Length: 75
Image (cartoon, rainbow, N blue to C red):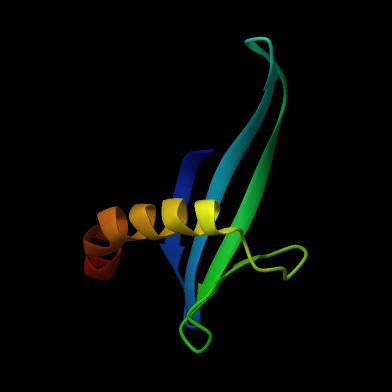
């Protein structure tokens, strides 16, 4: 999972990430996923399916948000 974009809207934060699927070192295909964190829920959800993300993805998304939050808040 690679970070594409982190942004803030009036409800919370939006993160775009690139998920690459590999087999034996060869990249089969990639997908762009959008995740959102609403301030009212305090949980990460996939924007398309509205499902909660796994613990592993949640840790990664929280780290990205923590690293980039100071730059987002300045805008």
